[in-house]
Image (cartoon, rainbow, N blue to C red; front, top):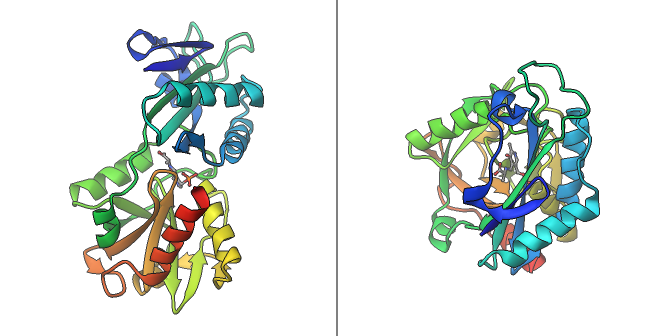
Length: 279
Ligand code: PDD
């Protein structure tokens, strides 16, 4: 299937990027992941707005107008063989002819890459059981609100989880849980839904926004505030949310059951609301 690279659609095997690309040398770039359901991109405008915000946050001009991004996404969706897809977009600060930390001259074009892959959401069996997670110290930088490709701390946290047979690592900073290595986190206690606030220490998830909207729509009591590690450990329900995981119950945390160890009723309802909403 063709991928998009710097203005061209071409087979993946023919796509070439310079080894001096700043994405490769410095992790100097940004990305997005847009879910596609039945060949319809979900919340594309919001994803492209976050891409724009991240580009602004790293002082990189958007190389393409919004309409051009939309066309690229639509063409990738059309050409891919799957109905449900995940569209990956990446922009890096391009390749200069020398290595220097400071930005290259304005004449160096950004590198733009995009491709489609099949969207694999959690199976009914995984959803029914929930997944296991660990907690780790959040070792990321202080601009976690930017969706940048420098993901080493996230990579190491997720790998630690996987080596312990877990699906996700929840990141604790100053005794508050901020999010997962590649997901946002929600907690339920005594019927109250808790969500960490959007600060520079958390990625503003597009799915997170949908969850807040669905909670409001269904009169679900909600508090957006910092969640202490102790509250996480005594929660009735813990969920992870993302464009690829949707709403997924975490039923084991650091080897101990969350609540009764089964996906809780609000998480099950929220997943159903999400299904109704996305279709
Ligand atoms: N990750 N927090 C982090 C650190 C993430 O990487 C992601 C998404 C989220 C959830 O954001 P959204 O609901 O917009 O997908 C939260 C994507 C899926 C990824 O890196 O593959």
